Length: 224
Image (cartoon, rainbow, N blue to C red):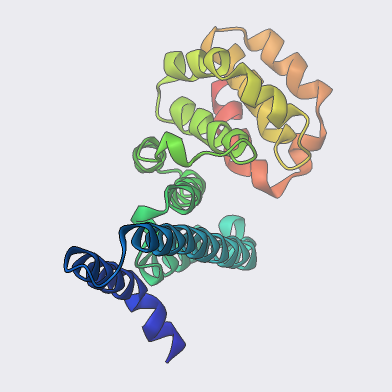
């Protein structure tokens, strides 16, 4: 019952404001009282909207964490789950942060499937205004990977320079540092520095042990 009311809340708000406007126009409500009530309603609508968006985002993040193991174990199943989640959030397109989050993870799924073109397409459709300070390094790391794997190495190298702040943040993040190292190797290979790339890879033997780097190392070994 409450869920149905929440969905209709914007219409209810508009109806209430419309009634207030009519009452004020007919002189039933004084102008000063009208503006006070109107201000309270607008502020209340804003607070409720922000709260609902935050709850939806938290639910989305929790759902992504739940299916995270599938990303490397079964990318097809991972993408199927993501598509189901995408459809389950009817207002996702109006929440740029949630949209950026979902599209980035879909892009990650296609990287694991070794479908770099589709991954890049999904990642390039991410709304930049949906990238908050905490999430931006995650996005640019995976966008960089997709660019290199889609044979757009020049664009990948430019991204490393243009978004150096975000990549430095990724370097300090335990969840992203391995991909930071991968991108450094990819940039060296793009510059035909195979010897340097091999040396860099040898300096980071932990990359060979990581399940989430298998696709990356497969590509790197082919280039080496």
